[in-house]
Image 1 (cartoon, rainbow, N blue to C red):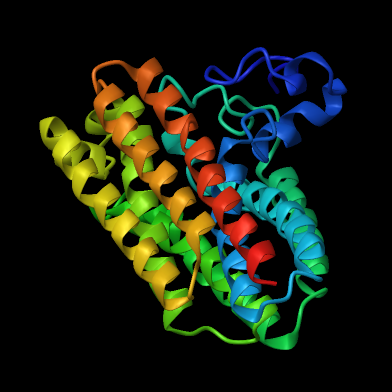
Image 2: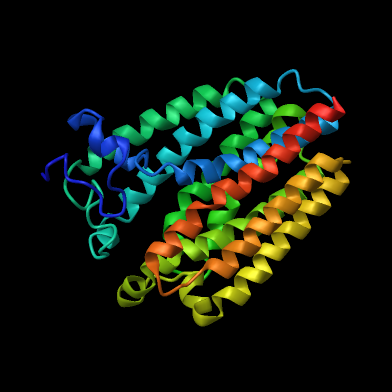
Amino acid sequence: MSDATTRVADATGNWVDTRAPSWSRPYLRLSRFDRPIGSWLLLMPCWWSAALAAGIARDVSQLPLVIVLFFIGAFVMRGAGCTWNDITDRDLDARVERTRSRPLPAGQVSVTQAFAFLVLQALIGLAVLLQFNGFAIMTGIASLVIVAVYPFMKRITWWPQVVLGLAFSWGALMGFAVTLGRIDLTALVLYAGSIAWVIGYDTIYAHQDAEDDALIGIKSTARLFGARTHRALAVFYSLAVILIGVALALGGARWPAWIGLVAFAAHLAWQIRRLDISDPALCLRVFWSNRDAGLLLFAGLLVDAVVRA
């Protein structure tokens, strides 16, 4: 077994490496608590939909609690998803420079230990889900099918980012299920817009590993688009802004939400201008910045919900 204090190559200098007890570090790394950006990106569509649905309902009384529960659920379930991903990808991760130091390929935990940790995280996620209505509970459980199949998609399709989008955008449906007890056209359009956003930002992320992925036969939109990535991002990011705008119109959003959408769009345009796909470190920084883009939109939707209440 590898030393548990050994750091993951692309996640150094974080609180897990410097402050967490040694025994806990491999498990926190499995959950990506050393790199919480993915949890934030999973959370953003949850918060968008919660705020938009509260605005439609003209009732923000439950919104603070929903925001907190979504926060906990997103971090726990992203951790569970990453643990499952690492279990299924452990042999592939051992062949990629950036991922070979992850807990499973590095031998810091066994597959059995990782499975047990996966179950623990899933149970915590279930406890959060059970705080909602029956329709929301069933909606949340339905997402597990997509989460389960996602790790295998990069072996069989050039578009694994689409499946990731289906999973990471599920929160766009959850806010409506929790607040309104239904999934209507507004929720579905918001979901579609979020999927386009995920395809864009995960293409940026995948460019970090494009060379290694080509060597071991892993497919991705980063490899598919190649030199055409900037144009592809312009298409997907534009689609995201348009679809989210349609959702806002369908939901009767007012001026604060539209200001949030403009800020969101401006940030995505900045990403396209800033990106250099030949610079992995820059790709990672641009990818990270999507949390800020998502928060800008959420801020507008939150103010809108309060104004309409």
